[in-house]
Length: 195
Image (tube, rainbow, N blue to C red):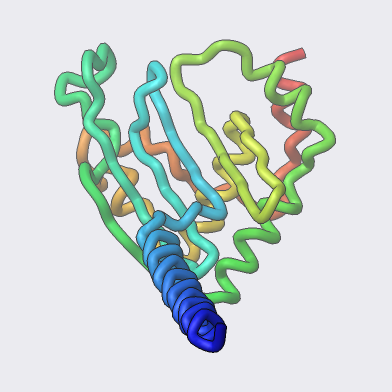
């Protein structure tokens, strides 16, 4: 009887040790998998023609900015299929203050007029998308003046014109999407334009 109790105690002790070891292994593997997952952008700005992206700018919660410029396929507007100054990836870093100002610019957009502006936009060849995600909050917007407001603000912090626009003197330079939008821009201007 004593031998059976000793064996049972040893098995229980070893089982507890084995369970702790397995829990530790799963914890380490789980952390490794989470570390390999790509971070989700806080703000994503995409300019597209015929549903093909010209460029995408992703801004992460740590202030990292990732630009990707694309060459378009079957482009009727440009022989080269290129509407941006840089094809490929570029990176920059925003300070915490700059990131907060960009988020404030997003949050200050007149969302109450969003539906009207999206309806007025109608079907266009060119689309400008804003995707904002923070925690459980997510929103997609396809309104050019909102996009212009955010890209203008971002351009004040880092020179995205050098990525997005052709250099001055190039015949395509004047078609650049990024322009300087005043901070006090009246979005109702666009509503009156379409009435």
